[in-house]
Length: 457
Ligand SMILES: *Cc1c(COP(=O)(O)O)cnc(C)c1O
Image (tube, rainbow, N blue to C red; front, side, top):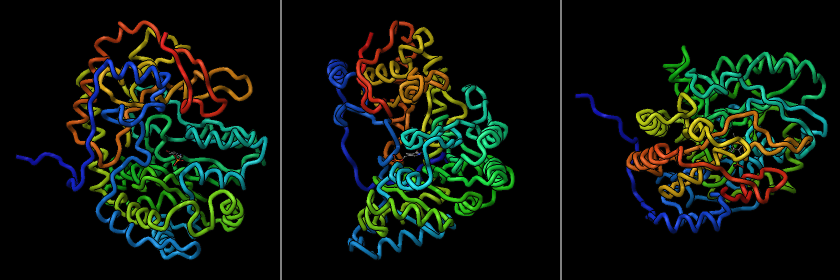
C-alpha cells in the first residue's frame, strides 16, 4: 500500500484555542460593526484572516533568536540576514524594513512621483495604496483569464503582455517601474510562470522600464513552477527562486509570508542608484541601515526562515494542505477560484450569494455568515478591499468578490480543514435564506476594509 501524505514536521509546542456559541458570536460581531478585523482573536476559533505573520516558527528559528545581536549599528545578525538574502536572491544591496509595506514606502518614496503610471499584475492593496497615496496611478495588467474563476489554467497570475505593452507605449517616460507580484495574491494566490516572468521583464526592459518583484510568496511561486512548468521538474526551489530574481531589477518583500517570521520585510536590488535613494528614506522611516525596524533576533529568525521555506518538503506540506481543503469544497460543490492557490482558497462569493447585489457586498456578507456559523474568521478580498476610485469616488465593482480562507503556515492540522469545509457547507446549504447583505456606515478614504463599519440589512 502506498503511504499517505503527511506533514514534514512534528509539533513541539501548542496553543489552546476555544469554541464559542452562536449567541456569543452574534454579540461579538455586532460589537465589531460586522468587520472581522475588529474582533478580538479570543473570539475566533479558527483564524484564517491571513497567513501574514501568523505562522509557527521552527525550533531552529527559536534557537537562532537567542543569537540575536542587538547592536545599533553593524550587528552580526544583520550580516547573517544579508548573506542569506544575497545567496537566495542574487541581489547585492539589502535594506531591512519592519514589514512589506514599509519596504514599499521606502523604495517608492524614492521612485514614485505624482502623475506616474505603475503597471502590475493586480497590485496588492498596500502596494496600490503606496502608489495612489503619491498621486500616481496603478494599472492592472493581469491576464483576463484570471477573472473566470472556474477556468483551470496553471499560471493564472500571469501578466498580459498585450495589456502591459499598451501601458508602456502610452506612458513612455512616465513609468518609473513595473510591479510583478508573485504569487498574484489579489487574483487568488495564483502563480506566474517563469516564461511569463522572463517575457514581462524583456518587454519592460525594451521600454527602459525596470521591474520590481513584489516577492511576499516567491517560494510558493517557485513550488508551482517546479510542479507545473516544463523544464523545472528537476530543479531545486532555491535554483528556481534564483532564476526568478535574475530577471528583475529589485524586490520588495513581506517576510511575514514566505520568510516564516511574525514581523519583517526588506528591499533588495542590484541597482546602486535605487539603493542610494532608498537608504535616504530608510533612516527617517525605519531606522539605521543594519536594522531597519527589526530586532537583531528577528533578523536571525528571518535568515533561518528564508532558508527553511525554500526547501521543497516545507512547501509541499503547506500547499498540499491548501489542496486538501480545496478537495473538500469540491465534494460539497462550493465554487472557488480554480485551481486552488498556494496560501488560500478564494471562495467565489458572487456565485454563492448570487441573490445579493454588488452594492450589498456579497463576500463581506458571506464572511459574516461563516463567522456566525462556526467562529471561523475569513477575510473579504473583494469590493470592500477594492476601495473607491480615487477620482470618481465610485465603488470599484470591476474585479472579483472573494472570501479568502487563508491558511497560516505550520499552524492547523487537516482536522481543522475538515471543520472549515463543514462550516462552509452548512452556510452554502442555507445560502438562499440570506436575503440581504451589508451597508457601509463608516469608511476610511484609503484601505477602508481594515476599519470599515457596516450594518447587516
Ligand atoms: C503582505 C503583502 C504585502 C505587504 O506586506 P506587509 O508585511 O503586510 O506590510 C505586499 N505585497 C504582497 C503581495 C503581500 O502579500
